[in-house]
Every structure is written in C-alpha cells, then in structure tokens.
Image (cartoon, rainbow, N blue to C red; front, side, top):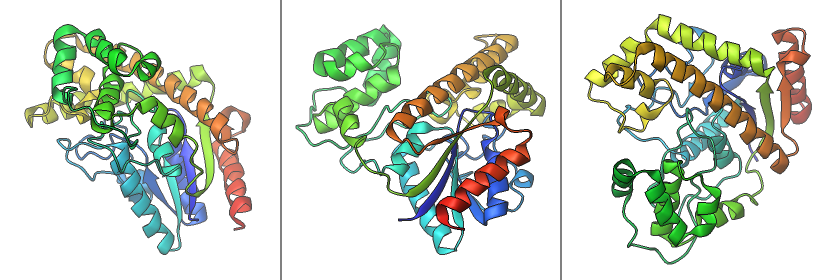
Length: 340
C-alpha cells in the first residue's frame, strides 16, 4: 500500500506552506487537492502557490486545465492516483494538500465512479459536501431531464421546482439535500437518471470502504476569529494584486458564470460586479462573507470525517509557540509512522 501524507483544513490556514516545508524535510512532492488551482490563468482568486513559494518542490495538479474544461472528483481521483504512483516510483513522499474534502475522500477511500454518467464537478470554493459519488447498479431512469434542462428549470422557476422533482423520484436523497442547493439536487437526479439508484444510499455504501493508502492525515486549524482575519486579509491582498483585472481578462476571453470554473468564490462575485449587478464594495464583502462560510463548512466536513477515520490528526496552530515547532511536531509524527 502506497504512502500518502494528507494536509487538509480550511482555506487560508497555511496548508500549502506547510506542505512545501515538510516536503523539503522529508524529500516529498506536493499534490494539490484544490478544484480551482487546476485552471490556467486563475491565479489570484484561487490563491495559487507561486513558483517562488514552491521553493523548487515538485507540484502536481496545478495549471493543468483550460478554464473552459470541467474538473471533477472522478478526474481528480484518477490524476492524483497517477501522481502518487509517479512520486512513489521516484522514491519521494506524496504529500496531498488542499481543503476540498470530497476530493480527499474520493482518493483516500477509492470511491467507485466507474458506473457513473457525467459527474458534476465539486466546487471547492463553494461546497464540500459529498454531493456526487456515482456508481450504484440499478434501472436507469431516462425520463428525467438532462443537466442543462434542469439548470434552466432552476433558473426559470426556482430551485424548489427542481428539488420537488427529486422529492418525487428519490425522497430519501431529497430529505438530505437543502432545497436551495441546486448543484446537489441536480447531481442526485442525474445519478438517478443514469443508474436508477439513490445517490444517498450509494454514498452510505461507499463510506464503508477501507483506505486505499497508508495515510497520515492532518487537518490544520486555528482560532476561528484569527482564521477569519486571515481570510479578510487574503481577499484584500487579492484585490491589490489585480483580482478584478484577472477576472476581466477571463471574461474578455469568453468565460462567464455558466462555466464551472467561474462559479468559484471570488470569480463569480467579481463577474457580477463587472456585469453591473452589484458594486465593487458589495462584491468584496460577498467574497469575504462567502469565504468565511466556506471555511466553516470545511471544518464541519473534517469533523464529520474524524468520526469515520479516528486516525485523523488535528493540528491546532494556537497550541504551538511558532510555525517551526508545529512543523517539527508534524514531521516527527510522519517519521514515526513510516519508520523514517
């Protein structure tokens, strides 16, 4: 079983920097578990690590897609698995860093996507709930509209209309999905259309899978108010570094909110500003508030994951005198686990 160090946690908690430093100490290579940093040209709004910040440590799954392409948990699982194989063959330690909980889960437990129809990409900047784990056998329901028709229905008549359709066809899954969560509702209908089965029941079956890797699983955290201050400061820095200009360039290239990539936090708000729907001040406040809510959901995800995986280790930055001491602690845990 291949080794895999996981450094997870909420946005702005310092995962990327920790992964680089531990890679330097342990001869590792970093794999990004971020659903926006995969896109070329989406640098500022995704807080993408720079070449200088990489410090010559090899990084995988960054800048590999055009923003017009779609990225999904299934594609991430496949590409990350190949990266782990390549890194391991080179005698280096794979270190997965990111905050997209379902991506990490799909890789660690080898969730089965093989029987799926089209997989709706998870938006790391918006939702980290287990919204799509396709692969249950059943009798497909071809009478359910396709994704585009469902999206148009939600825009035309509201998300409740689409949710009502799910409630009629799959009340078990509908009961677990908020009526306003169009993405999860559509994915559940899409899964039902392709497989004939309930996505919720399938997810429960997938959750019984054992880990596919010998993993050391860290989740970084810190005082909530301190994290929120870091988020606000990061958003301000994004604006200073040219976030509006970056989004304008993408918009001029023909990208709009119909693209999965442009639905990410930061990008869709600036697009709304550029389209004259909200003011710049409103866009910035929405980004800060949305990112705070996102960080809260990430922490909720990982607390839930801890119940499934008791070996998950919380790293509270506030318990250490400085970052170096925290990294010393993490390094020692990794060395003890793998006998390095």
